[in-house]
Figure (cartoon, rainbow, N blue to C red):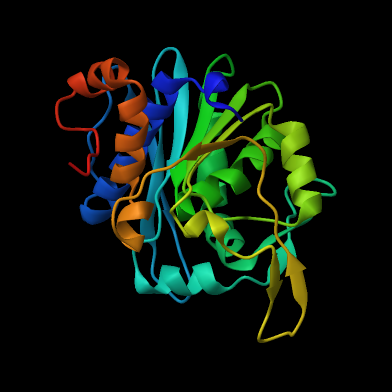
Length: 262
């Protein structure tokens, strides 16, 4: 996806929303800063490898749109889930292909809550599905599932620093069913390069093929380290540098809700 086709206001707004999924995670009560004009529909809890339930995101809505947002990796057990790169059936859409088992297990743990929350939304609202890092993978898994459950709803996907999620069959299905997909990826971030195109499981010795879904929007932001290149704040700043006036407007209200590495 070229730079001329991205909606920069949407990209900056949803990146700021993604930042609040980390705020939610770090607050024991799950609170976070709500963007102006939005209300909380409900929060999402899920489990990673041998973990207890943790905050994984939320659903918010205004009178014009709704947003499903997922956070990235935040615990050691989630890193284990990230590394379980064997593939499993994507069961939510017919002929849905195969997807990363670790990501899919996390999505499965919160799917029931997600479907229930989205069912409460007016069908007229455009539904944005977004996430950073692991959250981008969860958003990629969620979008075709929600499309199958709520076919009358317009669904748009924006992800940041997402790893690869599934095999060629899953990617074809996703690309066919999700018209708007923007996958923001920093050239200097290693996470969008994982899992590798060919992954050989040390446990099963089986080789799996991984591809990205459509819609790449490439950034070139060298922040000085592997973690910094992957940081959501780095992604936000790179986007903001391309549209500073829009970024200023997005971040003006509520004050302090946008991420920044500077």
